[in-house]
Image 1 (cartoon, one colour):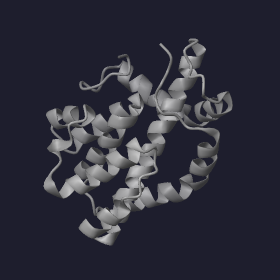
Image 2 (cartoon, helix red, strand yellow):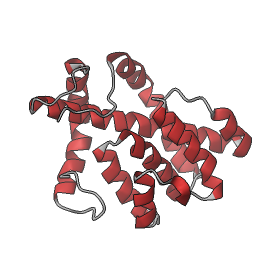
Image 3 (tube, one colour):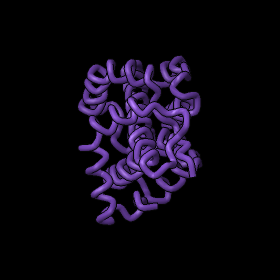
Image 4 (tube, one colour):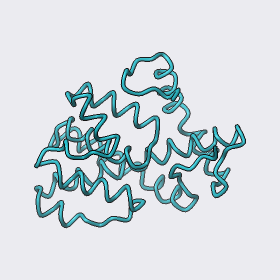
Amino acid sequence: MVFNKPILRLGELRSQLGSAPSMLAKVVAAYSQQRLSPMFAEKLMLVVTSVLECRYCNWMHSELAIRFGVEPSDIESLLSGDYSVASEYERIAVVYALNFAKTDGQASTTELLSSFYPKDVAEDIVWLVKFVFLTNKLGNTYDAFLARLRGQGPADSSLLVEVAVVLTMTPLYGSVAMLTRKGRNPYFSLDT
């Protein structure tokens, strides 16, 4: 089976990684300011992951969501595309995250966010969604390289991008892969 999940392209890798330090600073600020509950933030992460299907992000954000109090049945619902478990307050952000992921990061519905949430909360949502979108694509690109080694790599992928991702992301994705092989997360395994 040929690998067919959304991956990073060369131009996207250049632009995304160039902005990664400022994006990371904004995500750290969003978490430290606590304008969004960790539960709400993890639900957004799961929504983006439900579209892009990064197995590492699936595992990690399922684990974090459980730790922050999201019900296992809600995690399963979000990952399977049932977003009705989002509260009324969360729904606008969920729609934004879903549209962002489905349009490959092109959705520009930030006006709706800004009309519903305070400006700083809307900005936090935007940065969290952009961040998890990037990390999902990084994880998928990492897996595209592994698929290539098995003769199942995507035809439209760049070996240069895959190698760059593997060289920079192995500490993160390799650690997640090792943890999941030990069976720590009862809701998702990377061996599936």
